[in-house]
Length: 465
Image 1 (cartoon, rainbow, N blue to C red):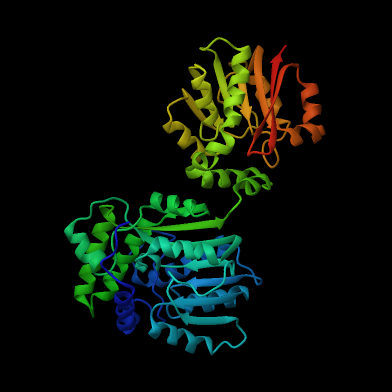
Image 2 (image 1 turned 90 degrees about the vertical axis):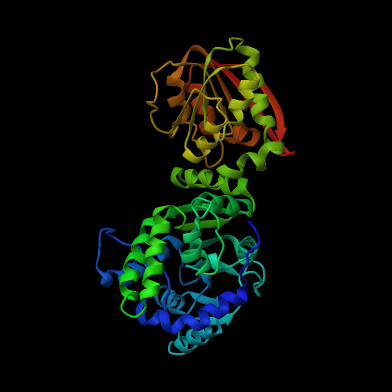
């Protein structure tokens, strides 16, 4: 991102001066965020504040915050949401904001609730005073677009968040660029910020700093409805501001402004995080989150596994036009290795649509299917494939051994199945050996190699008879 022409001092001055103005028509309690509407066709201004509360409730529902949580509220404003969070969950909340006016207001409000665990401080998100791993949760609403060194702030958020901690926030986004002069005047310059990340950009930057996005939501239609109603609310006292809000609606309609929500988990060790998963829904969400950086992170330490597996198949299957299913294809690393061996008819299936989206860009598969190997596979006829290859899929926290029966149905008589597994998983898994004994497969080749420098693997080649 280019350096901003605005500074934190500009933002601080803006919000110190504007508190009473916004209270007069936006929210008399001093909250400044947007609404999440049950019905976007509503035209009543009295629906705006309930929609704002609905957004609080949605975020809390997603957050997993409990009485044992320690929460940092970035951009806490007048403290309303922090106090509400503490009341609802009995958690500890520390709120920070650039505006001394708003921090003073928050402290005054908090004094009315001595039983709640609340603290407020004037502080910048780019230079947090807290030790590493201080918080279980970081919460922010309608704030980060005002942080002119946003990537630095996100790194600070990651630093003070504990491992497996949750960060959830909403923020203004810039869906498409360039920005018209009209939108720059009425949106960006008026609110003192530069065009920012798109929804996709945000997911990329969060992933790159180890914040794995488990949930995201484009809320731009709700932002449009919010400003549509705010324009009506402002019009009697502030007609010029009402017009500015109308211009914001225009910018949203032309995709020069948007609003998005993100929930991410701090994950330093992605492999352990993946292996500890207990159900398919969580596994799918984790792989969706990992998809954008998967190839980059695993290229050197892991790619030998797809390469060795593809070579093992090539030793027994010379027909380069054979129909091959890559079961658990992920981002297509195995497909790339098969293509390097000269195979041209490749089909992919994977639990994660986001992983498949990366694979699709590589243009190595004829067809790609989203599906769960642990359920009957109906995307093709039985006995459709000359070979099936499954690399790193039958392992801890992933597809159970019984799923091999579902894949066996798709394999032709005489076809080959390449099963690449961790040595410890293979040697210690009685359920896997039971399934292999039940299948009409003969082991025709077994190779051992190492990934991640110390992790031994088997590439097992079976033939169906």
